[in-house]
Length: 249
Length: 312
Image (cartoon, rainbow over all chains, first blue to last red; front, top):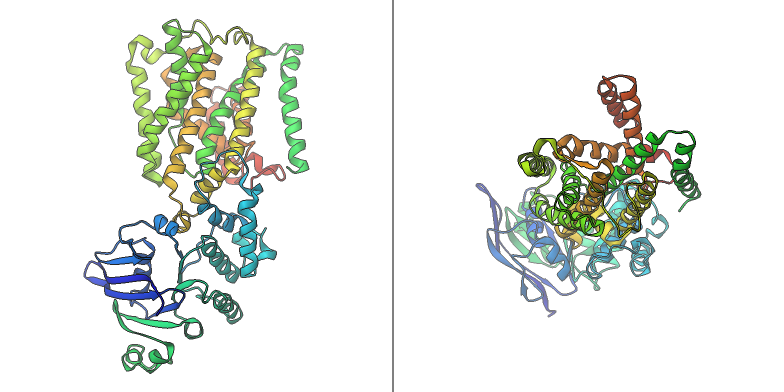
């Protein structure tokens, strides 16, 4: 069995009386694409924010590559190789696509207290950025202002920024949300191309995406994981079917 | 640089270089004085543009450093130290230190709190200036001898001082331009554009913002030292909140996050102010609405009207 990269134990977070995550245990193995699904309000977003470091849990532990990172803030986790995309597209809208990715490259290329040389003329930033844009299929749009890209392209750009941080583990929060079917097929193709190379935690509503990408699936209901298994096992699980009230899985 | 930009800067710098002989030929030394003042304020506005325009830090207390720079010159001169190297060095260094202290506290806040806390610190310095009777208190004090640069340049000569201001102003605009487009500047601008995204890819904006705040304070301290020599007088009014507002308005009128904006804003604001003041004593009643209209209709400021003038 492959090494465990991310190890979550007893993760809990309450907002007043609401237990958004209520003792989550999860193991993510090296190289796998691990999907987390669940009905609306199951606590998926709260969960991913605790993994990325934007929310601090009330209890529990997150271990990444063997190290306890429970207390680390988001930017420190990113430096350790844990990067996330956002459910609502989060890019630098008033910068070009290339600038967006180059900024992500720069974040992991030593400190940025360099005041004189123009960053846009720095091949050590722009060349890797251009390669990553090529990989996600945006190279012909590299000089377009991010705000002027289509919704699907903006999501691709966000994946490119995550890739540019050279993460060991990618947290993808609903990468195909709000996409048309063509766009979402393209995104699924892009993510399929990363399989095996990157470890991915995929939080997603779109069942096509989940079942075509995931090696394993965990089902989150009312802040707890009720089942973890291969797509076939999850499809056959009675408890999961009950949680989805007969929706097709 | 686009051709339009090269043409723009060539024309602008040529006009500024030719102004002293033109003013002398027309026997209008007043314009020399006015444009020199505008160039000194362009330095102050350029420094504010670094943190406000590129960094998104709306400091409403930037006049503090104008005051610190001015008082560094005035107080040292009061005790008989007239070396410009020392005076201006202290002006820059003291401004950087105060900016470090003010920034360390205020950058932890954001939005309206940041505006209010920077204003509050500057008001404290303003009242400090008023309370020190030895340096003239409310009335301020005259500077008997201008800064002396080992005889290299005589600031008592209006034309020499004018050209020094021109060179320093161009150097400061260029410096801010380089910083804004460096790795450091890109981090600063990115954090303004989308802070959660910056944290998500591994940046912690605080340290970058604080360093920018210190650079801006130091640069404005230089403007303060120059302004004290320009007026040969220092008063707490250097630090009044309306000064902070004036500098901020120059940045906005000129065009936020543009290289030439601070100079255009300072020139236009001071020239219009002077023209209106010569025409009627109620000039502020006209200037106010003009400013409101310019903000409403020139969103990108005066620099936005030059093709290709905006940094991408």
